[in-house]
Image 1 (tube, helix red, strand yellow):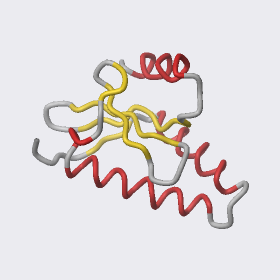
Image 2: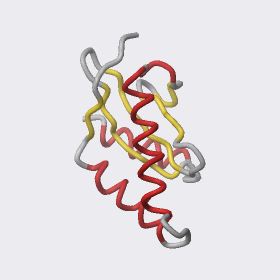
Image 3: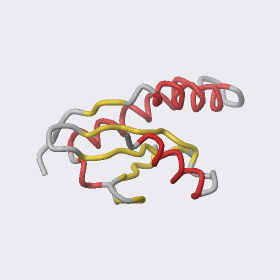
Length: 104
């Protein structure tokens, strides 16, 4: 697969704020470190969107290095769309429910 740009649903902003706040609350510079790892992971998705496995229907999951969070996205013809950035320790049924609501 060729590389392609990544877009984000509006709800991802809330997800990222939650994740940043979580790491900032107990790690010095935790929020900024998390965001760097997030952007690194997005670069991998841009480079080769198919490298990460499907986890639920068409949603793929890229695990953010050294974190509890995963990036859930869909590969579309011209773009990869990030639907959620979620704590993977959550009940899988809740994660699926969130993804289905954001599917559109």
